[in-house]
Structure formats: C-alpha cells, structure tokens
Image 1 (spheres, rainbow, N blue to C red):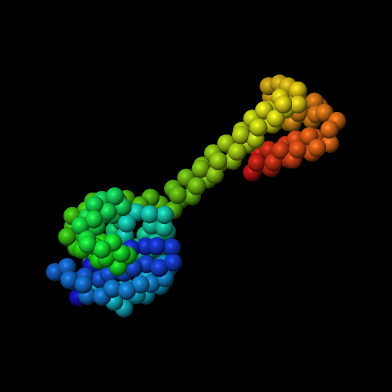
Image 2: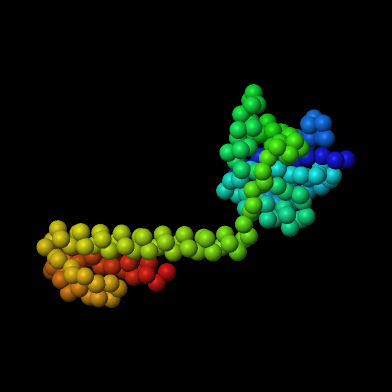
Length: 194
C-alpha cells in the first residue's frame, strides 16, 4: 500500500506517523532514535512508503545518511518551513508533528533540503575544532600577557617558543605567581600540539 511517513526526531525517541494517500493516519508510534530501530519499524508499518519526511536538526545528517543507506526514500525538510506548516495544528506534540510532516511530504508542498556528504561534515568539524583550539590558544596568550602586566612583567612580541622563553625569563621569584604562569604556559603548549 502506498503511504507517507513523518519522523519527529528527539534525542531518545523518534515519533513516527504513517498516512495513506488521502492523508489519513494509518499508524503512529515511537521508536528509539536509532537507524536500525527506525528502519525495522518502517519495514513492519510502512513497507510501501513513497516518502519519509525528516526535519533539519542536530541528528538529521546522521539519520538521513543511515536511512538512505538502507534504501529508504528519505527527504529532508527545512525546519523553519516545516514549522510554518506545523503551526496550523491545534496541539504541539511529537506525535502531531510527525503526523504533520507525513501530510506535508504527501502533499508535495515543500522544497527538499540537500544533505551534504559525511566527508564534508568531517572536514567542517575538523575546521571548526581547529578554529576553536587556535582561539583558545590566543585567548590564553592574551590572558598571560594581561596577568603579567599586573606583576610588572612586560612580555615583548613573539610567538611559540619565543613567547614562552620571554615569560619564563621575566617571572618573579614568587612561587605562586610562577606556578600560575607555568600552568597557563603548559595549557598553551598542549593546545598548540593539538
């Protein structure tokens, strides 16, 4: 039987709704948010699914790729566009959202969102992580320079080993201050290694 499915994804559970060609609810329920569990439910309850709608969100990329690998006809809908259609519903629940998504993909009144490859997301994660680590390193270096001024230590320009040598060469005899700067310098070195 021809049917359409809506998936409302949350961290632990995914609400699933199956509608027929007329848009009437055939079945709804929940599944663990796991591609194997979801595909098992769909195999039992929606074997003739023409389209399976899922909104953009934090777990969409993972689920979309995993369900597509299982040869399920998944389409990704922009969350803002879907939210505009789902606002028309009386009660905002996961169950009703899944029903609304199923009816939305049945109607065809949506523009599917392209989901980028996992390689693209890996590269993006790498670049974001690198940017974060560089920012943390820069913030620590600036913090060291600022704290040093409090104790009358003026650190000249320099990067990497030059900066560390300048700081260590100008540290006061105060063991507390020296330990503080050493711990900050070791964090900078660790971030640089990463």
